[in-house]
Image (tube, rainbow, N blue to C red; front, side):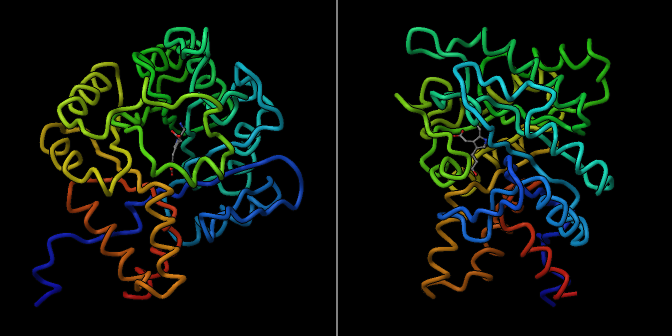
Length: 310
Ligand code: PBG
């Protein structure tokens, strides 16, 4: 009876698995606050993406940890940058996997902000040029989809234009449209060593208190050419996700972020919660609220659990 009347069903097809790539050889650094997640060098990446593909997960989302950080985040848009190298490795070894690239400067800048800093402020329009350049560089390396997460105004339009004029008309954009200024990104900033060195991201990321603003941000991104739109984080913003999926027909992604993952893992390790059941409950709620695509550090374990239920 339950099987017949169930309204929401998770499928491995819903998931995108984030991966952190880093320079060096034989590097497999576990990320403290994200048990089971690693910073991986390219040689280690091969086995990882092989496993992801075997599990039937359709796509990975790449984040890079550069060799050096500088004020302009140069490695983000160098052809030999770590993400570009990782794309080539995956294309060679695991061509069936879809490669999505996070498109931001915060992992690459020494000040840790998502854009160019002028007089202690992020300069929106100068940042657009660098984001456009990064998009082109990622597409040239073979990225199947770019995912701008810097929250600069006009970024989707600028990236669309750069991709089109560079011969990448067919490369879609998954926009981090409603990205909140959230403390739930804490563990990610350990993983990517990308905490802002001064100030915070309130100037460009959204106020957690706002829902109507999220609708405007999503609408703007769609007008600028976004193919998929996103709400991030997921768990504390299920109302936003539900409202957005009602209001827009575009495929809707939700990012089950690092802090959401860390909370579940920490409680499960202490045996305060049943990790598997809580994870499935959370992810089901994200889908029920309206997500078509779920970006989650849980993707691999969920793929295994779903397969074992069949
Ligand atoms: C880059 C970016 C961040 C996340 C995804 N892309 C960090 C941030 O905005 O500080 C966070 C992902 C997570 O917490 O899992 N701007």
